[in-house]
Image (cartoon, rainbow, N blue to C red):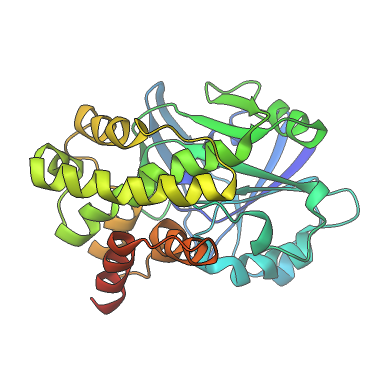
Length: 287
C-alpha cells in the first residue's frame, strides 16, 4: 500500500486528499494546523466524506512514500518542518502551490525527487475540512519518471493529469490567471467584476506585464493570453471567490508575493518594469 501525506488542508489540499482517500490502495494521512473530525468535499461527481487520520504535530509523523505539499506559498517554513519527518531516502515530494518558484522553496530536497505541479482545480474552503470543488480540473506536471509515478496516484480519480515537456510555460500561463485575480482582492468583489470594462482592461495590463517577464524567463506566451484570461473570468461563475480574495475576506496573510510580487522581482533582473503588479502588491501589503 502506498503511503501518502498531504501537508496543508486548505481548499486544494482537502480536495486532493478526499479523492486519494477514496482509493483503498492508498494510505493517506493529513497534516494540518487545525484539527477536524470529518473531511467533506462537494465535488461535481458528488460528495466525498471520510474520517481521515489527521496529524497536527510534525513530531508525530513517520516517513511516507509520497508527500504532497499543498500549503500556502508563504508557509514553506511550516511545510519544511513536516518534510523533515516525512521524507526518507525513497520519498518523493509533489509541490502543489501557486507561482513559478516551486523548486526554490524547498532547497533541502533533491530536485530530482520533486514534482512541481500547476493546479487548476477551482475549489473554495467553507470551514476546516469542508470544501466545495467547483470543477474537476487538472494537474500539470513535467514529463519524467517521478511525474509518471505521481500520475499513478490519481488513476482512479476524475482529475486530469497533464504531462508537459514545457512546464515553465504552463506555470507562467497559470500565473497570468492568478496575477489578474488580484483585482478581486483589491475590490473585494468576486470574479464577475471582470465584466466591468475598466476592470477588464486593468486585468489585461496586469497580464501583459506577466507575459513580458515570463518571456524573459523562457516561457512561450502569446499576446492573446491577456484576452483569454479576461474571457476565462467572464465565462466562469460570477460568484467565484479566488484564494487571495478569500484570504483578504478572512483577514489572513495572502500569497501576494507568489501571485504578483514575483512578476516585479523577476522583472527587475531582466530590466522589465511591472508597475501595475507592483501597485497591486503595494496596496495589498498596506491594507
